[in-house]
Length: 471
Ligand SMILES: Cc1cc2nc3c(=O)[nH]c(=O)nc-3n(C[C@H](O)[C@H](O)[C@H](O)COP(=O)(O)OP(=O)(O)OC[C@H]3O[C@@H](n4cnc5c(N)ncnc54)[C@H](O)[C@@H]3O)c2cc1C
Image (cartoon, rainbow, N blue to C red; front, side):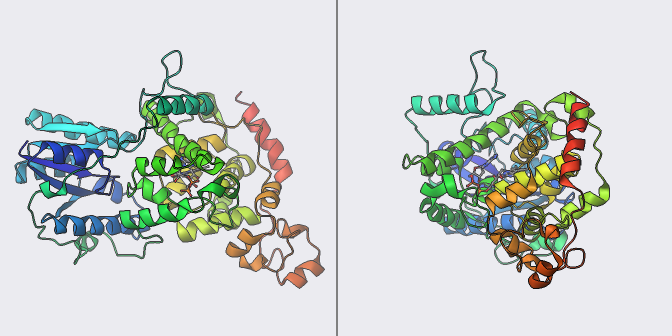
């Protein structure tokens, strides 16, 4: 090919990038483009969404690398189904290269682009880059995809080790980038903000350099991951999810780090990465899980919860300290620890009796690492409606979770400072403390911090009957 185009989407990096490396290998000149997708951006409730700033950080970094090689990023705002063919025409491109995305909207969009370009005689090549194993690469004895995680993981590892744990690295010669200068210099002028957004401070700095720095930092902690990962008050996990979600890191970067040693920490971390592949595979094979329960009988559940309780859950005003702390952290930083995602999701569905889809949508709006496959998987796991979910009668006791995973209340104190004066014994259920204890803590329940909005024990019984009714 003479001229090719690489379309960046959720793979915002120039290293270890399958589509880019193939384009550079097979074309005389490679252009690189990013489209601010109006179909996605116009649906965002908050026009100051920090995920857009995160993307912008990543694009600026890419632009500066492209500039060093005499090239520039082609940036457009609009519907990619229209914008990509326009770029192809404007630059007289012969082939399009991109990495596959498994979300239903993205698959439909890509098929439309592919069909249109095919009619015009343009070659389209797409690659598996964003996961390690996809589609039907990990199958059970009946040649079907797995619906239970542990055997899936075992098979994943078996195939991985059979290929001698080979993790390919897709390199490319950036000297073969097309000579081009973008007239709208995204480094100097955030022109697209003029159209739709006001620039905000991103909670996290985006970009491949920052991602590599964080990965390196995590490598110093990875051996402790197995035990540290369940303590929300410390940085026991990698905190890399926004970087892998936007593709500042490749999945292979992460897998390489996970096999550097054989410690329990390394192995447990790899297992989490395999969960990611598992949920991507499920979303790809069952795109309906986006709105429906994977276990369809649960679509009949009559959710008994109240809208006002949902709002209190969103605002971190439920009177359950660990839940409130987690939700306030999400609202402020766009991040939430995995243990707490499970706690608040179980609380919403099985204590407040509210449809998991409401919580899933709220997370989609707020999470910096929002990823449809992982988010849907996590919510349906917690609500017991999903693939390999926990059984419906397993209901997290929010008080026990709090005492077990935040024993001294360190995390609660970070996000609910009004509770900081309570002892490590009373902080998990301040409403049970005496007026004297409340006076000593400088916090009166009902005045400075809410009473529990529902009673856990009663709600537990209601949840069990709500689920049993559709079994
Ligand atoms: C209700 C709920 C909603 C969730 N929503 C999302 C989401 O929108 N985006 C998202 O990336 N993760 C989601 N998760 C999974 C998990 O909570 C986050 O991946 C994790 O907290 C990110 O922090 P980390 O990067 O420090 O993870 P680490 O513990 O360091 O794990 C490394 C990587 O493995 C992947 N991973 C870890 N756990 C899971 C998991 N259970 N499922 C799939 N991938 C996993 C992530 O890419 C993560 O970055 C959700 C979990 C639950 C219970």
